Image 1 (cartoon, one colour):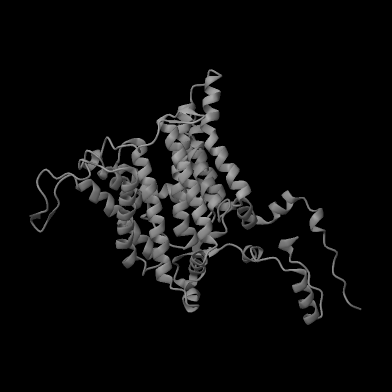
Image 2: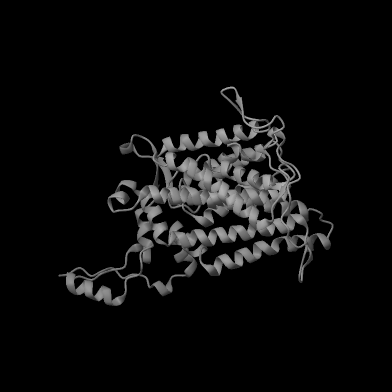
Length: 417
């Protein structure tokens, strides 16, 4: 007597929201990165300042500019989180000096768009300069450092970030090496602790059709949102390309990827440089936004902040990076009346998330020590079933051929129910 398979619940009878919930983080990321979700999200994000202004014009509320500035700051951190997620979540590189590239882009733009060197380049020329300078520093650091892995790479990149901050602080005077002074006594490149002031904003129109005059803070909020949308589009396209698959293979098991013919050094360097250039462009936008470039904008604390956003949202998740930036930027302002307790509340929430959801809110990758690698930090996939859920669907013809060859009924796996 042959055993009969248990009757399965019809897929059509299951509510779509229930199927989405049961699909787990992989299904959530797939759903949230579809154009039908991303396009309305960015349209809504672009319309939020107009909605805040409408509320202010028709009520006694007067905080439209304040909250638009907060949202602009949130959009900037979201851009940085997406760029960091590219190098950490996709390629598996612990880059603790990531924020240094933000500072390099900020100062590179300030030097060619201010009175510091009496240079005022047009926007697109300055953009090329910023990208070239940031890429040069990324290659300078990445070529020797990316031959390391795990916590050794993290230490080297952290050292680079600390060195860059000290170099920028010390370049308000001519550098001296072995008793030889390089440059005249009046040389001042970075302004030291004062930074560079009166940086030129982008040469953009002050009014738009159908909208009218656009304030400075609102224009740069839209610029950050636009660059975030461009970054998300590019990262998603890379994720499904040959390069993206190589990054994921290196992250999951670098030795196996190398054995399969993947040029691991080339792809690691590509991820490192791409992420650095994205951070440099964000630094350029920030310098034009606040008219200044300060060394305090890219200290170690900023690196920790962006890492918290990425890990909170989930490694390897683009929607998670955006969610992490929002969750770590906006709540402190909502809780600002609780002056002594707001960060305590945020810390408790972070601890709870790390305890009950160590992969992050939407992540499918976690950081934990692997004993076989000597305790170094490795990026590991959270669940093997998640990877199975990303496989293409099996057609009825393939199922029939498999049943004919195996002599048994082929049932759908649990993750497809």
